[in-house]
Image (cartoon, rainbow, N blue to C red; front, top):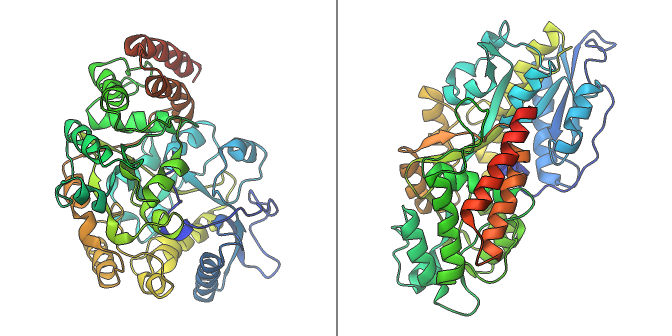
Length: 447
């Protein structure tokens, strides 16, 4: 799944109309002889600041490259899973189009992606991007996309509630038993305070179950991707912990079947001690839910084994011409992949416009590019970066793992498992996982 935002600059977007004209390489030469490319994921007009940034950056790119005409299309969300495949199949997708990490293999399998391998050497930043992120868009040795951002899951917690409960906010829980113990102490504060909250509806429960399973060293599917792997000691431990926190400790509150907005509201109101999320939740909690940056902190995934990562990037329409591919790669370099510049990297501009700078987002770059990006981010930071140091330090020891194949369908199955455990005290964990495994096997068999 995506995290919450899409990223820092898209946190507060509203709903925009998606223009479908000039998509799918409906002509790569404008009347004036320029190479024309359509691109998506432009912020809608309702997000005035982000829209202005995007338009400024496109204009700057066209001044530097007078032979290229960029035609951006606005949309939020940047990708709608309900229409994504239909747009691809119908030839309505833009020349350069946004994808989640989990889309890459699917788009290649249905033969809707251009092979960038002959051209990627022209993308100046490509060699500076983390290899594990580049590999997401590499299929059978061929390159079909370029990563733009990434996120990893961690434990968001409320420092003030930790202090009130007699817990050290500078030493957050690192194991699931420690999370359980801390949640029990926070819930004991009373007044409707909840120690730990989790999602269990709209596929979000399955998403978090996966993250919690990874954190313990388990998996959703077997290594070959053909069979379910949730009915394991690790899978049972995830559900047993949730069950005991909910029913034995009473630390998860009485209201269940929660989704992300419910949990964010609780944290923003100062009534929740901990929940799992990515760093981009933090500005939403402050700007939309009433929290203060000083009260929010981030720790690595408890469990010490792995953390779920996600993110996004761009792929190219299968009918894009060589000229359009070269133009699109130049555009990606300019907009998203230059430290200190462009839509995501201009930290000075972001700070000037009161956008958060210094959140502990996973590092996109390596080497000198990473050093420059970190130095610029640090010099313009306007959030309490010390509150995220535990997350940054702890992530160094965790395996980074992407979502499973057929993720949304699997999450739908696992939603039912998590919701049953959180709403039925006598839920049979073994039977729930056996039934879920059979359903997952069927999904994987259908491909």
